Length: 278
Image 1 (cartoon, helix red, strand yellow):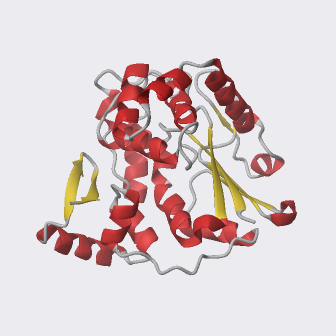
Image 2 (spheres, helix red, strand yellow):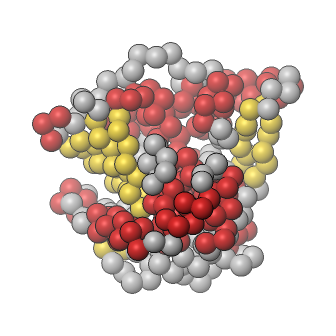
Image 3 (cartoon, helix red, strand yellow):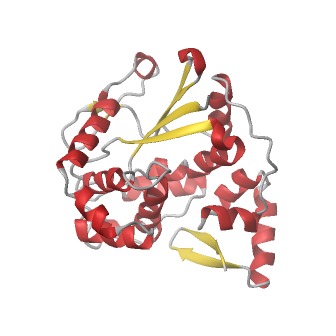
């Protein structure tokens, strides 16, 4: 039986973006031994004036994940709720619970400065992600998706005692409603054994929590840098370091060599960069 992992997150949460190395590291090491559910936590019904520039730059500097905060200066996003509902709509037609579409949104928002808070923009991202557009449009506008997102919000607002004891209660903007910090991960093994991670945590913390409830590594060899890019698509160097289990300098060296051989391409970001297989 797979260990169940509930990831309470949001497409516009920069610390969830910063946690992608840890998430992809678990997906690689444990494979089918983990069953993922992505719950949309509703970061902000309305963003505050000035947006999230400071938070984005701080997260990028601390974790090495790329970010371009200029989206907050040129027609800033008004809310994260439309993107959350779009992930719920995508999850209706893909087997990964909407993760691949969630990732596409994050790259668009954090790396390419796209204002993804309208139906039209979210449908375009669905096109790039290979989703069936007619179904996506229908699902995105349905009452069922509104209800599904509402259920996710209730989960995020059901703050467990462990979060209160750790002083990890947060509030969504602008209503000030209590919720868990984003991201929050809940690991549940057989026998209802549970471990929580509240907020940003290291890949080592993710691994420890998974194993504490009975998850076992798949035993498969870690991929090389090029194979990791072929599996996941675009990746930042910190993600490759975790997924490939390599030191950061080794990752940078291999990327440089692969670029010289025209086997990978650099995708420039204002603060940082992504890489993709050529």
